[in-house]
Image (cartoon, rainbow, N blue to C red; front, side):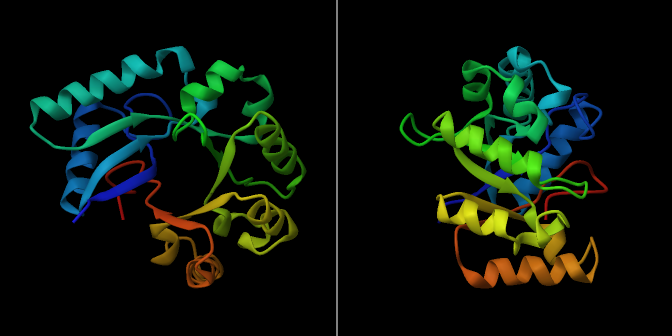
Length: 205
């Protein structure tokens, strides 16, 4: 059987609010592997990293996983907030995107504040720049009506995908978010489940 692929995973050390050390990164990868994950897209918050350093940082973790004989494939990527999209060049967006040349996509963070306007504008810009959109944890966003609002319906109509957090399903963020996550998964539209792992206290799930 093919292993799982994680499309939202903060595994790069010392970058954002993810693992502080390389040892913690390895521990997170070991937990993910135990759960059947063989591929991890590294998704640091783009605002917290020099995109030009991404390849080197991924190589460092990849080399340590190889030294520990952990068969986990790492792919360089990033989680872009709405404010990141306009300031990133096309090459920088390519550096944090995934997929084949004709179908590149970017993980776009759902807003944590009370407005969806900036998010919608960023999604529009990504589409205009020939990227697909994967919406990170819309079930957690009140601004996106926990994945049921007009913005999300429009994104689905445009071919975007939704990424639901495992911890949302487990009730980590409360009943409203849990119900929203289960509804999105039950709808069986373009939805993927990922952990959004950050640390040993917020592990792969």
